[in-house]
Amino acid sequence: MNITKEYKYDVLVAGGGSAGVAAGIAAARRGHRVLLLEARESLGGYATNGYVHGIDGVISGIGAEIVEELKKTDDVVPKTRFGMNVVFDPEKGKLCMEAKLLKAGVRILYGVTVIDCEVQDGRIRKVIAFGKSGAFSVEAKVYIDATGDADLARAAKVPYETGAPEYAGLNMSSTQVFRLSHVNRKKYMEADAQWRLENPQEAAKSSYMAHMYREGVKAGLLPYFIFPTALFYPLPHTDDECADVTVNSSHSIYCRSDDTEDRTRQIIEQHQSMLCMERFFREMVPGFEDCYVANIAPMHGFRETRRIMGRYEMTDSDIVLGRKFDDAVCRFAGGLDVHHPTSREHGFIRHTHMTGDTGNAFVSEAGTPAQEVGIHNFTVPDGPEVRPVPYDWCEIPYRCLLPQDVEGLLVAGRCISASTAASSGTRTIGSCLTTGQAAGTAAALSIEEGVDPSCLDTAQLRRILIADGVSLEGKIEDVAEKSEDDELYVSFLDNVKIRKK
Ligand SMILES: Cc1cc2nc3c(=O)[nH]c(=O)nc-3n(C[C@H](O)[C@H](O)[C@H](O)COP(=O)(O)OP(=O)(O)OC[C@H]3O[C@@H](n4cnc5c(N)ncnc54)[C@H](O)[C@@H]3O)c2cc1C
Image 1 (cartoon, rainbow, N blue to C red):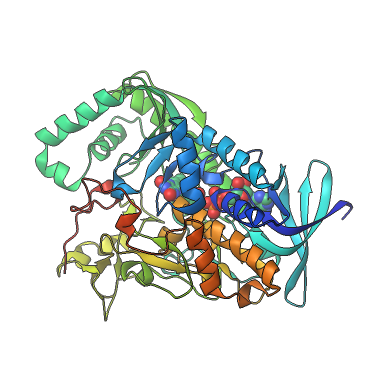
Image 2: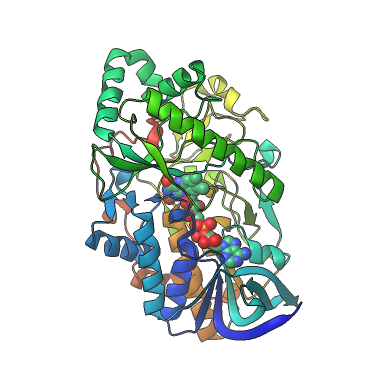
């Protein structure tokens, strides 16, 4: 390969999504020379270019700084979900992230894809990237893979997983988010409330939007049932009676999201479904009569692709049992959020099944698991249905950021070491921002201490993260605004009420 240029930096960050941005800022703030390579021409990844602009997970540290910055210009819509979810303007999000990276002194190169690396004696020696001026190499003291897809780790031959073994390696369903303009949200909310009033029995187990999607299929406007709930995010600065919303509802199933051919199949399928949905909304859904597709998210929403196999793998039981770790670098308070790999009807998997000690987790009454066997269509679940306790939280250990076998490399964001179900906690934007900040800080510390990232004093790392505002101490309530939903524990958007053991 013809190498046109050779760069040398202290820290190389591959990918400028939520994780990469926070990693770059954290490392540069400690005085290191940081280069960030981003394949696209703006930052934020799914959080901006995927139109996934509602932050789940605990927001603290650099994540909280970004939110505070956006609040100053009213580019944030506060939400009540678990008191921790904020929706922001994706375009302003890109600009805010870029400004913060530049202020911290990070060199950004846009339109550059990391394609390969050289590994010697279990250590990355240089990374090869490709941009408009051709291929170039970057040598760094520490490398951070924040590509979301573990592209750099894969090139370095780090073992990885994709999909869930109980679903034959199929990934969670994927979604092409799009932006609808001219939506009368007020009229829609009124129609929703009226339907609930008139159909209390159906409303107790389903949603107005699910009802409308079924009507859409009957009317021949939709090719299939879309999803059990309405997944819309509002955009700031638009009026309730003439609003813009992003629609996060249509799902492609049976996905192999690290396969180029299948990714293209999913994209084309979602484009076709979006056109049907626009017509269905206009013709059938109150409040959407004048709507139109104003934008298609520049990134198709592949919820998961590769996850590295690290020195610790988070599991679904870590989430439901609220496990804590001595080397924790991030906290997650929320439920399981697995978008079903093979069913649009069931939508999400919100629980796991466990035998043995279920700690203080929520366990469903006998009988419920049998009724829900249908959602585990490749395996029969073992043990009762278990969900996490509201206001408890689990922690993500530093070891999830450390790949097996390869030194000098940290991984941050949605491709860290976790099972598909546990990635419910690790892939939220809040967690990606925080594992990014942790990776950037760890890279800096490892250079300062002259040790490999795997040999860091994690107590020292945690002290720095806490001093830099990361929520690792105290109760979660202390960092979250209380909302009226707290006591009820509304499980994300689908109003699944759970019972205590
Ligand atoms: C449809 C959908 C809905 C979701 N809903 C929510 C939600 O409501 N709330 C929530 O908190 N989370 C949600 N998530 C999850 C969350 O959005 C993502 O997991 C998170 O944003 C991932 O952040 P990241 O930085 O790890 O990766 P990404 O956002 O994927 O960023 C990776 C960046 O790296 C760049 N890149 C990739 N490969 C290379 C390469 N080889 N070289 C250089 N650059 C590269 C990409 O262009 C991108 O900018 C959703 C995800 C999807 C797909």
